[in-house]
Image (cartoon, rainbow, N blue to C red):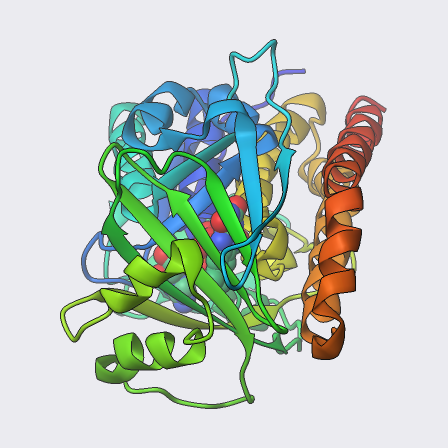
Length: 395
Ligand SMILES: Cc1cc2nc3c(=O)[nH]c(=O)nc-3n(C[C@H](O)[C@H](O)[C@H](O)COP(=O)(O)OP(=O)(O)OC[C@H]3O[C@@H](n4cnc5c(N)ncnc54)[C@H](O)[C@@H]3O)c2cc1C
């Protein structure tokens, strides 16, 4: 069903905001992004994009450029080791479209944003840097915004894609603070030895350490560990602290942990979750991406969910001529898959943190016998939920 072109303002130029801008301009809407950063600069280590996220990138027309900028893991192979480097098992993630969509792509976050920005430029998306929304009012005709720099704007639809601590969410009157999950994630970027081409997961004592290729010559490592709430670490100390946190890891982790000197590219993030019941919209204001459903990173799916939000939102706006109906259907279609990812990811993180460190051998044995089944079960269920979402969209 065709509809009149809408004037759309998106708050936040992260993965969700940029993807939505691309999807919505592609169906004829006019889009402006307000991004609070003064420069187009994104804290950058790596990110995984699994085949479901790559399919959404394909729908946005950016998958090939992403693949060229990142590293597709051959056969989607994930090799598990214990924290001393003894192999436990391998599992294989599913590719899609008879292998045309790779199973896992590792890519630098800054590269994702470079590709999305190039695409937005071609699509005529206006990006206002150093800009945000300070106040909003809406009525049946539209949304009126007061920006932080004093400007006023009006639009037909306002999309809050401003992440875990969404200001849009607060301005909609939703009183929801993100939940600290108890985990910190430490990440570092290194030169990639050419022979290291698989995703590696090392299973430590209530800690995980992963290694993932992200380009022809780079890889990133990521370590998850319980950290107390509200703890501030001086960024100058991050390389040393990451080295200390994962000091018991040897084997494949050792050379990268040894490289962590004061010059190393290290990032620390305290992980928060956003669990927001439907509806994700109020009138003409909608939340997408982490602002609506931030997940812990254990399934590596938050970015994929954000991109899929964009694709499904464009579909909902195309299928439903009334805005309220489209936003309602969007939320109903996306809630199931996003909630599933959040629940599984949370459970994986909590199981890891609460494991009995005297029983690592039995944990490893159980992992060896169930790893592939868990991967298959997760992707089968996610596909079924996406099918249910399709049915909701076409109602
Ligand atoms: C440690 C860690 C590892 C992860 N690893 C993966 C992974 O491997 N694979 C994966 O798919 N996902 C991963 N995720 C999740 C993924 O990063 C997020 O789900 C994804 O970035 C969400 O995108 P977003 O655009 O919704 O939010 P964000 O990425 O948070 O972007 C929000 C944007 O809005 C801007 N903004 C914020 N407030 C305002 C404001 N008031 N006004 C204007 N602009 C504003 C910000 O500057 C930013 O540009 C990981 C998350 C974490 C924490």
